Image (cartoon, rainbow, N blue to C red; front, side, top):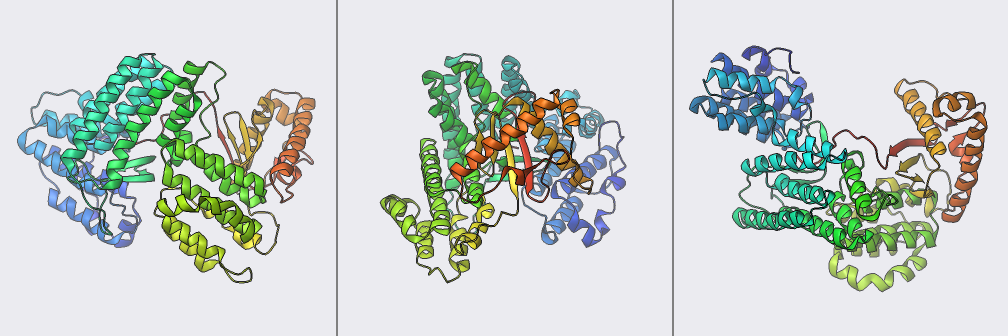
Length: 585
């Protein structure tokens, strides 16, 4: 369906969907089916014949009723889009067609390169409605993504124009959460251009817009069957990852979580303005943490680079990159316990994390982080030590998170010889109400810790976030030597390639590594030796497992990451070119 491929006939666009085998239909991704239904509707309009709106909606309903891949986030909008195309055709309305094109593009980065803009343009010509191809190509989502790329590349003035166009369209088509997000993008970009007054005006407009939406949509009490206006957390929308996704366009009611989501962006804007005045990193951390918390795709989006530019603008070129968000640190704490993080280190990490989450206004999440650490501390160091640490916090925890606290209390009462499966499942169940990092990476601690076992975890992950280097959440370098980062990048690529090709991971000789990284063989050997020394020092200081650097980085007859132990090797650069990333659709 890329541009230039030519438009199929209506019957071809619909394909054999009407008589498609259930097994084939059920394996189709919801977004792919939505695109096909919209294309079939467009082709029918161009040909003046073909599947009707009811035919297309019937296929969508059959999919919703039978496929476990149905999420409810894409097809409902697709059905509404097919109706918009029909209404635009019947009423010769350019506005309806433009709105339909905008709807199709949401969550689809490849939309501009597809045949949809051309198809809409040809349909408007068939209706004898004056239009331009750009009317259907420059949608709210596509324009927003361009604005992000411009902002990350340092072209803030151009980004302001793109964001302004995108915001107007999101407001016009009642994408409330997207519009609230766009206001924050505008505040951030105005601060990059040193126009604090303009940022304040945008913030005031953002507050008024959110208040207006909340008042107009009304209150919907939360029940077991309540549907959300916005899906929160790390969700998939089409072919990209987002933190929030519109489940309904122009919802007639908002529940507590929906309203909190809209106001979340106002708080982010307020923290950004506070940072522009104070230049205090705590204000930037609060903005970044609140903005990114719960969004796994944040690190690969353009936003870390945009926030880095803001920090550099405010603090100078030595400003640290804002990659180590509260969410990233929390996940690191869970991973680090696999290496038997020392008691003092676990308590320190949990306390710092709780303070940082509170600074961002994420109070309940801060309490869950503390309870997570308490559960892990119990698994590693027993009931008495854990009770001594957590008891002074009980009053506040009971007030804000009574359910998770009670689950922890019940776990602490389990005798050492008894199984924890039931109480642990209870804790995970009540914890799941909160949008917090996945606890799965730490579950092995309960099996090994309570029985005194100290075997290696199944996998150890290596991550380079900006200048910092981490092994399973344990910081090895605050400032990673560039030569070491270059070596790890090559070894990580070899590990990924070998696994993708289902072959043995090759040892890379010092000569080959030197050629790939632009270093001498002597420098390679010295850098690896120095890494092993620093790694051993940091692991001995922070953990009790006894993991050796040679367990990770094997060195004969060349160098490679141990494929039996090393899982993921991830790089999140502090700066540089980034492809437009994921945010809200």
